[in-house]
Image 1: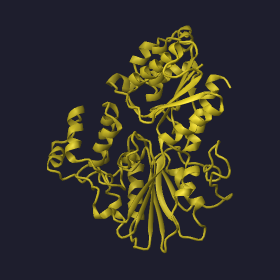
Image 2 (image 1 turned 135 degrees about the vertical axis):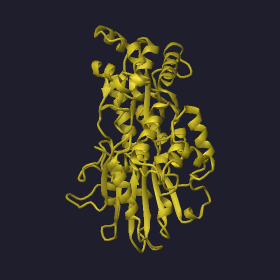
Image 3 (image 1 turned 60 degrees about the vertical axis):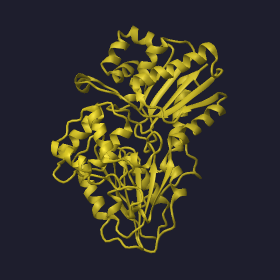
Image 4 (image 1 turned 45 degrees about the vertical axis):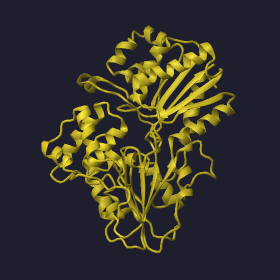
Length: 446
């Protein structure tokens, strides 16, 4: 395999290891005496619903509604089986089998009317439950935008404005979700409170650094340890513009979420079924099978995308030039979620996402270093406002860009990394992968 082919292979292995068809069936409980109702939200929720439907006994009651991003509904006949999953690992439905769980689509990363409609439908599905029933919640990254129910006195427009502010301010995902949980009528454990006497099992695919359940889809079905005071601190730190009345409600603690120990969670449990560490370990094993030493740097690297790109480049240079702290040939792997702080101009003219921005910054730092290749891509198949998952860089990236008349530094400054890698033909474009375990990064040194 060429270096880019090897990097693509490692990405494919990481994604396949995290696919719901592979990881979900082993976590399913025995059917209850009564009904089983499935709810969920996130980029992976469609595939999670398909995998659950396929694995659930055909003679046991099953119904429900989940919401996923537009274009992320897998085909019923084949969507449960990822390309690199072996047949004995993956649940696959029978040909032509009817779906028992409805999969709706809505907008991400900013909520829309379809998301509001889907949320109301999910709430309606929880009506009339008994202690003999069971609710299974399927949560994954992206659910914060897809599951949307504005606070009393707020409208969808207000929630859309909040999401836009959070996207461009540069806050970490933990800070962003602290705000989302408190300024929502459905997040921060509130959805769990609608299940009445029925027990609930949350199955979650983590796309957040640290794998905190309250941060996955902003924790609609789990306790929230953060407070209104924490929310106010984030609002002040990033200068978010919110109505004065809402700020006063936060100061009075009127928008507090459900906390650990709340009786609502007495019959609830939650499990992580796929994490960034899982996908990194799978990629590391694949690299070793290809004859390379593999080293996992971290599953939770955060920060501004440009800075994280420079860090990966610096590590690649140290290994390439000094054989420290590892000897080549080897691959360095990391996961996590970076941020990109946008200005008003970039919001209108820029192209790409955090992975392509990280790659362009790394290319500039490497300056064509021989023997170093890199890949950064989002495991959901979509990098920001882009049709690509991410991008590759090679030792000749800057030279080829210069031959095309591209100014790499200017395009990075203009948040236009997407157009940069599109012109080079170095984007990774798998399409929706139907899972989401955050960003995957690999530095190959030969």
